[in-house]
Amino acid sequence: MKIESAEFLTSAKNLEDCPRSSLPEVAFIGRSNVGKSSLVNMLTKQKGLAKVSKKPGATKLLNFFTMNKWWNLVDLPGYGYAQVSKGKQSDFNIAVSEYLMGRPQLKLICALVDARFEPTEIDLGFFNWLEECPVPHVMVFTKTDEVQEDVWRRNMEIYRETLDALGLRSVEMIPCSSVERAGRGVLLQYIQGALPKKPKKGSGTGVQLNWLKKG
Ligand SMILES: Nc1nc2c(ncn2[C@@H]2O[C@H](COP(=O)(O)OP(=O)(O)O)[C@@H](O)[C@H]2O)c(=O)[nH]1
Ligand SMILES: [Mg+2]
Image 1: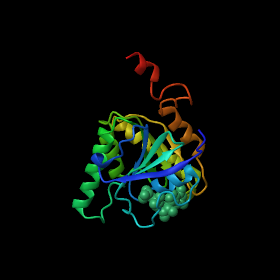
Image 2 (image 1 turned 180 degrees about the horizontal axis):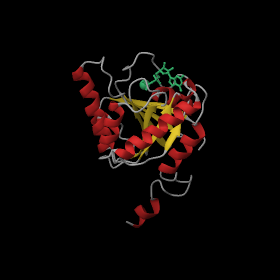
Image 3 (image 1 turned 90 degrees about the vertical axis):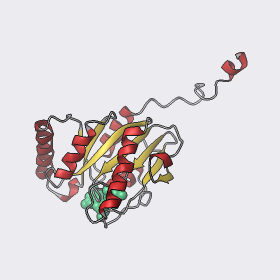
């Protein structure tokens, strides 16, 4: 899939506050600082579209971006950031889990983990929770440029074995680097496969005038 346009749509505090748009959605989720916003910018080739921060815990809202005027990419607040007060952290978690569980147009969850490290308890806890979620997910390993290839490959392998040992779903794992723009094509292709087919222009999927006349 080629990204021909990408525009910021809106920010939402929680599920209720989400846009009424019925476009299919793909969400990015992961720990604070894992590289969600950088990946939005890498995919869209727009440096400042999503706000990247050195300080973890900056994104507190669900940020919607409309891609190719046809689907929405949703940059979710990071989970598991200890420096944010406990109350605030659980507010984010409630907003995020309600969105992931209760948004019918959500077609794919991209769960980001840091390729530099072995599985963390917080991430495993999230994957365990995800098992209850009806939406399919894919794992994206970020920041592969930061370590040697054998290191991130090994970490992917350990993740695979650990999830397996916990009896959790085995899903596709895609290595990415926003700095080197690695993994862009593979991830976009995966996203395309998860989205419904885009209706062709003029194929009559808009307002059904003929039907209305007959009625
Ligand atoms: N080396 C490297 N750094 C990255 C990559 N992606 C993100 N970062 C850095 O990680 C930090 C957090 O990134 P951000 O996208 O804001 O993470 P978010 O909190 O998950 O949205 C920033 O300092 C980014 O520059 C990557 O692929 N490679
Ligand atoms: Mg962010």
